[in-house]
Length: 298
Image (tube, rainbow, N blue to C red; front, top):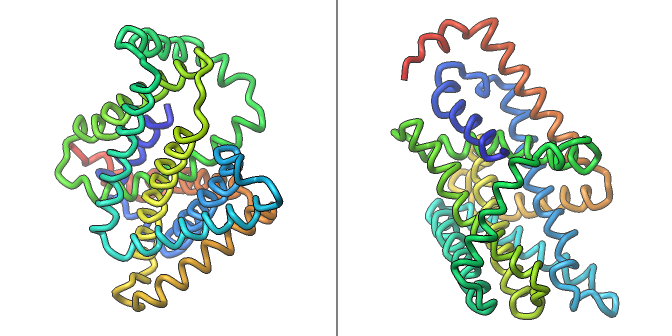
């Protein structure tokens, strides 16, 4: 469901925004960049808070704070360095994809999971959509948290995608954002369900492998967003110098991550800004750009 929303935002930035120019308005551009920076820091904060669950062996003897803060700092540093050159972003994107596929194959193999068992687990995914109302309603704080987080991500997914899909037809964009990512995710959750259903151990080497793949995905997500907001703000490494670029971004993201940790910032605020942008964009189109949008024929 959320990937469908990401497709809609990507479609907007690819097809409609070039005719509308709403996100080129100075105050909108400022709010947009605040959203991107805030979501970057919140992603690092989520990694910080979830690492103890994946690496419980590092939480003994009071090492939880120091160890996990060092890991998150290293992740932010790696992401900022990767964002200095688009070739690093592409390499990390390919690496995270192949590592994810390798992890699925590895866990499938050591679980001695047959094709029939995989298909049986995958067929159960359809039950999620049939019973989706049971997962969504009643709405509570848990749902609100993730809805605001998804809203925060959606606006950046759309902007980042629009920079790299020039020339794609709508059906090709739909396949790239919905069909192709859904296949490995369906296999992944099918394998995880098999582990859960059969009481298989997922700690030790398997757990560490999951952490490595997860961290690679986080770095790849952060470097894309860092590159997005630094280009928007014209604070690229080529313009300000690589040293200042790395120090400035690492300091800003680390400081914001700590503020999220201290509950000084909330992702709900970021999500609310995104919702306000969406309503503002709709009103702007209806009042000033309706003719340009209606003139779009392809």
